[in-house]
Amino acid sequence: MAAPLRLKPLSRVAVSGGTHGNEMSGIYLAKHWLRDPRELQRSSFTITPFLSNLRAIEKCVRYVGQDLNRSFTTEFLSSVKAENEPYELNLAREINQTYGPKGSAQAFDFMFDLHNTTANMGTCLIVDSEENLLSMHMCHYIQTHYRLSPCPIYLYKSPDEEPYTIYSVAKAGLALELGPQAQGVVRADLFAQMRALIACGLDFIELFNKGTVFPAFEIEVYKFTGIVDYPRYPDGEISAMVHPKLQDKDFHPLNPGDPIFQTFSGEEVLYEGNVTIYPAFINEAAYYEKQIAFVKLEKHIFSIPSLQRE
Image (cartoon, rainbow, N blue to C red; front, side):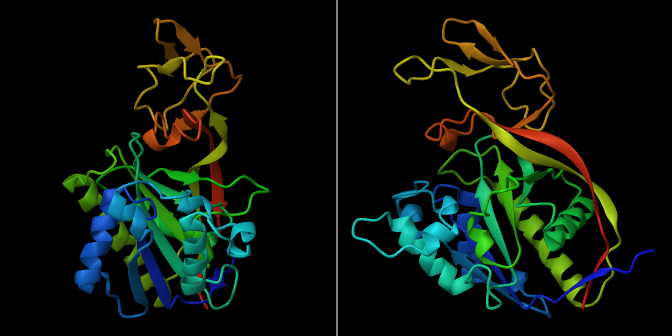
């Protein structure tokens, strides 16, 4: 049996709510923890809850100038502040200085990022890559110990793409994506689920810091491969809706020839790919502006080596 891979113990952890200002579970959890952080406390590390996009939260909108959760690339973070630049661009630099800098030894050890989606994603765990060993072990621990619902793992990063999300400023991270929940609304059931998922993740860090050996495992994940836009008229207006047979079927197999859209006159548009995929973020309200009807995922099984603290 191979010896466990060893990583340094974690000392500083952050929890971000309100990266998108109309996704309310994370916003109200962060507000609650800022008033009373006792349930977050563990003996072996400190944890810092924060509200990441205050202006967007005040206006109850996803963002004010540009999507904060796409603003943490090296290009954006290293740019010089300019007049009339989007509010979130300067905010990203500030967050990077507080919880990073990205890629540095001074960065926070881990960051959780809390999101809601209007799509039927359930309790989804989002990681940049299967190469993020600590996050993959945390996901496995959550899947093993959180029994109220399945927790599919979504790997969002393409092979040659730089991580661009808020938690990429930390050394490792995990985003929670819970839905369906309408924008600007808080639901008690999803609020409770998110709260329990964070508690589970913090328990994992505590066990890791105290020397627990986490054995190797194989794990099923869904890996991003591309996007599908809505059919459109020549003027750019959408000409079809997500088909009823696809709606709410996030992480279900979509086979060649299955219906994916229905035109406003009632005609079916079929999936013309030649392989089975697994759609996610189906009919996500925030993605209309991004020209995304759903994202395409492939299912993979990865072998993850055992892990222990140094």
